[in-house]
Image 1 (cartoon, rainbow, N blue to C red):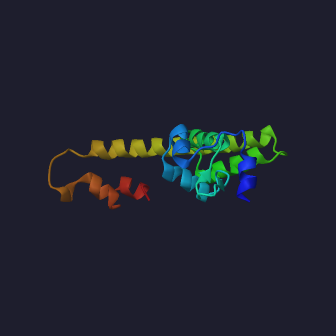
Image 2 (cartoon, one colour):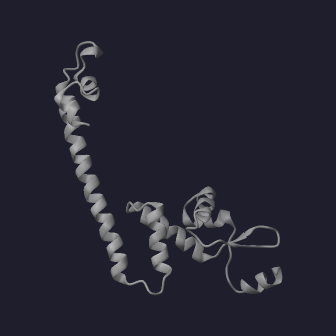
Image 3 (cartoon, helix red, strand yellow):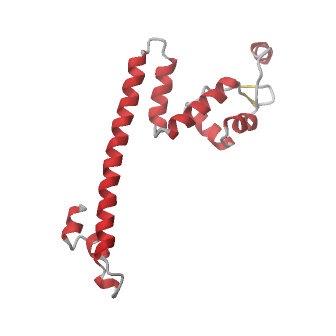
Length: 152
């Protein structure tokens, strides 16, 4: 079995987990976590028990990190990776995933804008004086004001 493994990787550059983490600019725990979540292919093992990683693992981790930077969750990234590996997947399917993420981002921006405006209103309503029992921000968060009722 292990002889077959050596033949399988003959001529292929392999890496240990620390090298993979360094080249992908993540930590070893991240590599292990992605392996556990089946986001990267399960690496073979050497006779010594060390995992055998290849450039494919590094490239896939970099893909995951770039997708995360665009706001994709690990579950969404797993779907993207599955589509990427499926030979029947079309560019249109990938585009649909990106459009769905775009719609999510637009909604989040709208939500954040609403939160921003509400916070500005709360901050502006506070004179910065008086006891905390009279604080309009606390009153709003407790639901005692019109602004507070809108927060629900």
